[in-house]
Length: 154
Image 1: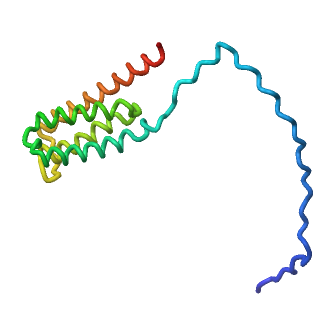
Image 2: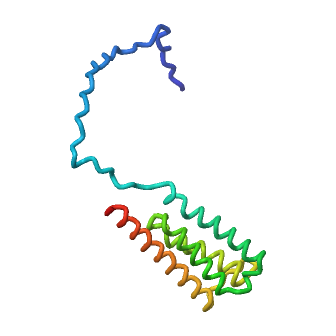
Image 3: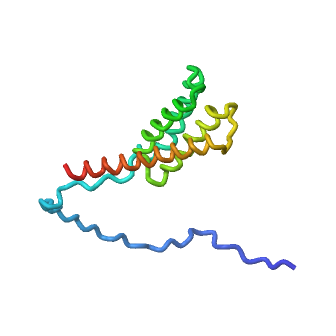
């Protein structure tokens, strides 16, 4: 059998009174200490967050330009252009994303320039291209470190 409970009160529900905290006026700010005037080093920037997607879009555009201009017939020239693109995309990227920038660049290079028809392989030219693009990303990391040193020490 089902047990029925008596109905709840039809009046207003009881709302307890909570006293509001008293406001304390804020203290006036002290003037900055002369030694603490230097700005803090920048944290994450928008360029660091967008380096991977912008690098992927740039690689897609580069593949399109190479295939339309016939530059895809010279894999060594295309690899040099992709290495330069990888270097430029890896400089503003966060350190964790730099290998991913190189990998995305290699995917476009290997799939469209070396093998055509978006086929991926891992033969000797493919491995060489991956190594060159990873070294370009490493060079981008070195350039970023050099830029940080120059910015910190005027």
